[in-house]
Length: 288
View 1 (tube, rainbow, N blue to C red):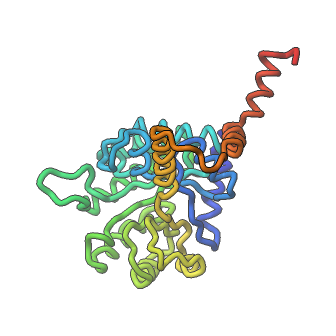
View 2: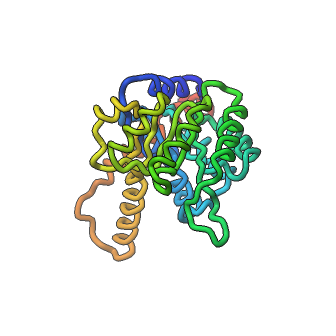
View 3: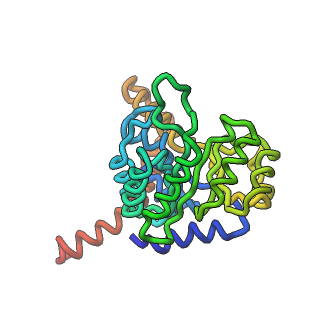
């Protein structure tokens, strides 16, 4: 893996003038699809990783080792710059250090650490926030843990979903005093909120679950948004397609359209079938 090249590409996005919409990817084949289609970035979300690895909802039951292994498989199979949702760092600031070490070793280009109180605390509402100073300690631990300065570390906050705008801005402004590579904002609902954040920081901004009415590349770019997520429909669409195909097979439904040749060609391309055949001929069947 050429980690430097892909990490440099992510940093070019952060210093550029354009906002990009990344592909939501979850395994080697989806990463190769995104790369083939020309996506500049890939995003491995915590919810998608939990679905894909465990078949479970996103209640922080996925482990660090499972996330890191999934990221490693994606990175070794493609050259796309991968941004990973590392949730709360799987514990306190010391756990955050370990999280960064493992994900850096897996080859990711960037990762987010958030200020949400995870997993849910007993008898407390879900999606609460940790103390802002505890969050600062976590973010600083993440910065200190990386050995490759090219790895991007983003401070992620859900403050806009649970606090007043004034309170959220105070927290965001505090986070912006650290040497993080950007701020990942979850819960931005309108342009006024985004403009208020832009007014207090020059750090690159990343958006989670960008509202439909805010998917204006020009306006986002003007407000220093470099990455805007569009959800994870690629995964849910893949699940639905698989379910429908299995249902047809189970019910012995006749094929309406024979697209097997097209599927075969796509699978051979994405799995690098020709390369493997060349290696077989070179190393195992040299006479051919």
